[in-house]
Length: 165
Image 1 (cartoon, rainbow, N blue to C red):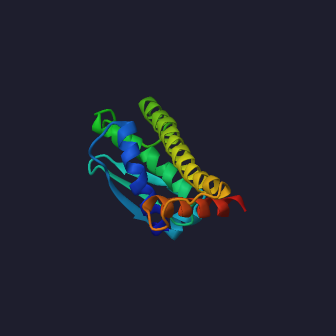
Image 2 (image 1 turned 180 degrees about the horizontal axis):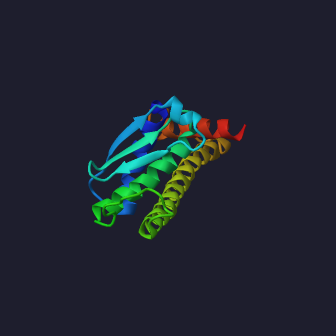
Image 3 (image 1 turned 60 degrees about the vertical axis):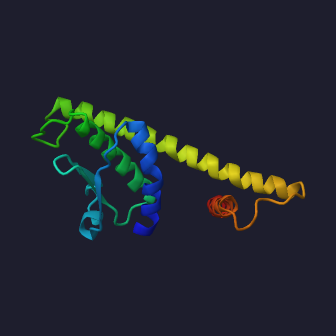
């Protein structure tokens, strides 16, 4: 799972930093925890404001779900850097109205930021693959097979073909 998540996170970080307006990324820990995964109300992740660290639980989760948790926690990182997290005495939203507002922002901004990034990535990858196919249909040569653009487009196209099956 880590080999799938690491490149996704590396690709996402510049976009997240730009969208959320921070320069200092958080520390990130990916935790394998079978006991937590077996619990229907188990943890998905958390942000530690004192250490500026995000911990994500990754056992038996879809990479996209993990990425959504990551973006949620990234919003908490942004809130912390802006001095808006404060000291919380509970994680129960029923006990703290300010926590409700903090969580609303993390859910909304986190999910929208991830969705915008995902749509851009898909659009770019589909565009590259469509360009190769259009050139082939016209009988033209596509980019040189050793070029980065060609390799990236082929990889994206193969990935898309798998998801369409």
